[in-house]
Amino acid sequence: MLGNETSVDECRQRNVFRDGHHRPAWVFGLREPGPVSRKYGCSLSYRGVAYMHKGDHDQAIVDTTQAIRLNPDYAKAYHNRGKVYELKGSKDKAAADFAKAKQLGDD
Image (cartoon, rainbow, N blue to C red; front, side):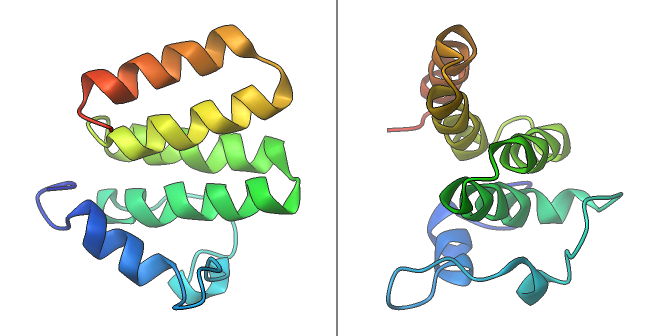
């Protein structure tokens, strides 16, 4: 469970439309990065993925890092941040995040 409240599949279902596109950030009431409770870690991680797809890699890293701070045991957040680091060419940071995600059970 993520933060003792949500499974990865439930999180994914809430954050992706049926056609596979990610929901925009406003769906979650998360228009701007800022203080949020632990329960938003999953949403922040997936919002980071949306920013990654838009090409805003810096904001994607901000969101996925905040997701990790809110829920340090959320493997998918490390995986998502690793993908962004990989796109930015930060191979060492990407490898570290992928290793942490794997350690936490990401497949």
